[in-house]
Length: 288
Image (tube, rainbow, N blue to C red; front, side, top):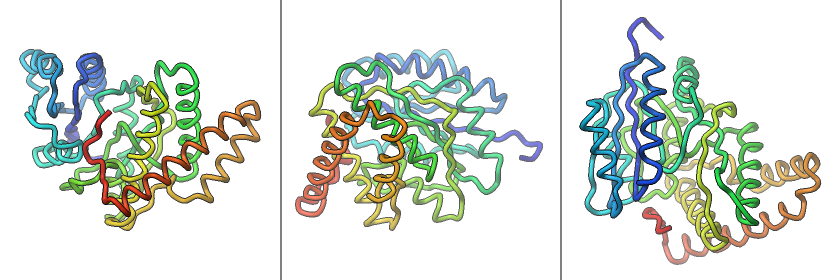
């Protein structure tokens, strides 16, 4: 980096996140201040029916660096991201889901990684919070396998940072991070996975929600593959199988649950293939 301090634009896409948004904003403000770089945080509150708007408005009143954008009608996360991209002036852009909590120093680690001129996008390691019961166990296993795969070939999600080289993403995409990955790599930059940066997220609470989430994500990956000619690292079956075998050798006690997870993933992907290619479903607006 040169002597001029880079400017950071942070975007949070929120829908009914009154329980988490204050904690997230507090964390991001503190971390952004610790970088010593100028920054703004824009919260796009999309079709919220709870007190998300009110909570963010209170931050905006007290801190000029926080800005609230209200979408009266929920248009989908991709649309909210595009609004953020249109008005962002930062050298580096950060996009965060509103239902996560990044570990301390996440932003600093992201900006340090982006100081490499060959790196265009970075992300951390999602780890579930408050995951209980069989669904919680399956969700934890899913993210463990995601981590193992990302170590071999990066796949970024939940909380990402990238150079200001993306003007917009397809409005119909249900896989926004994958779409940004595609655009960044198409411009000749590398993406980088930072496993030391922990991103705490909230997983589905029941099996139906778990399957719906997996279905929606794979539909998004099908869309990115077909429209952007890009495959995320978890798309191809053979590398996934090798990752699973490697993990089972290391964690033999988890074999039964891994088999259950594989069956659910096959089921969700099968439905996703049918929904995408037969019914033209895109799931750009996710109904939880």
